[in-house]
View 1 (spheres, rainbow, N blue to C red):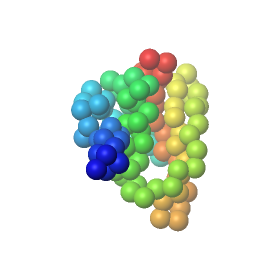
View 2 (cartoon, rainbow, N blue to C red; view 1 turned 30 degrees about the horizontal axis):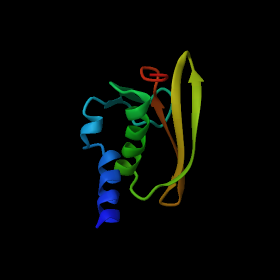
View 3 (tube, rainbow, N blue to C red; view 1 turned 90 degrees about the vertical axis):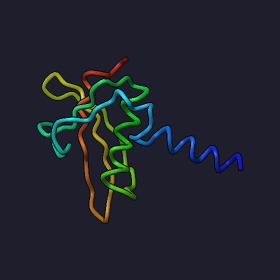
Length: 102
């Protein structure tokens, strides 16, 4: 019973429907480039980064994580998440300027 509870607790923690993400909004583009980055708003580092991964789980179920990079582009900060999904490689860009370091 306890391991099962732990699984659901962790799942709830990293689900976009979780109250943890109640103040986090993802706006902007589809994340396919800097110009179309997903803007993470209303977050801290404790909530923003998990929201990024929850986004990937929702939009790319079963993805295989490769790496996460912190990038600076035109005076804005981005997380670039590299992964494979359905046999293809992807990078999704999240604009984290608002919450980086908070």
